[in-house]
Length: 154
Image (spheres, one colour):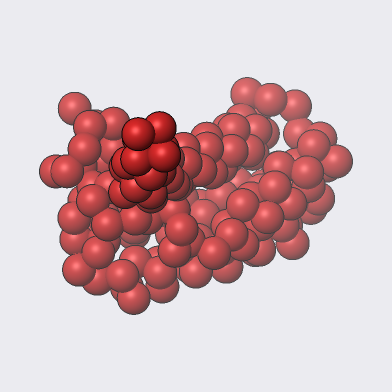
C-alpha cells in the first residue's frame, strides 16, 4: 500500500513539477526583462542628468553609465519575451502583443538601441555636449520601439 502511494505521489509530482518550473521560468523571464529596463533607466538617468546640467559632468561616471548601457543592450532578448507576457495577457507590463507578431522588427529595433548605446559609449568621455547628442540618438532608438511596441502609461 505504501509503495502504491509513493508511486501515485511520484506520478503526480512528475505531472505538476514541469508546470511549476515553467511558471517559475516565466516569472524569472519577466523579472529579468523588468530588471534590464531598470538598469537602463538608472544609467540613462545619470547620462541625462549630465546632459541637462542637473548633474555635474564626470567623464569617468559618464563612461561607466555608457558601458553599462552597452552591456545591458548586448543581452540576447529571446528569453525575456515569453509568449503570453504582453499587456493583454498579464498585469504589470506594457508590452503590446504586436511584439510577438513582429519579432524580427522588434529585434531589429533592439539592435538599433544597442547601436545607439555603442555611440554613447564612444562619446561619453567627450564632454557634456557629446553626451547630450548621443543621448538624443539613444532616446530616438528607444522611442521607435516604444511607439510601436509599448502601451502608453495609464
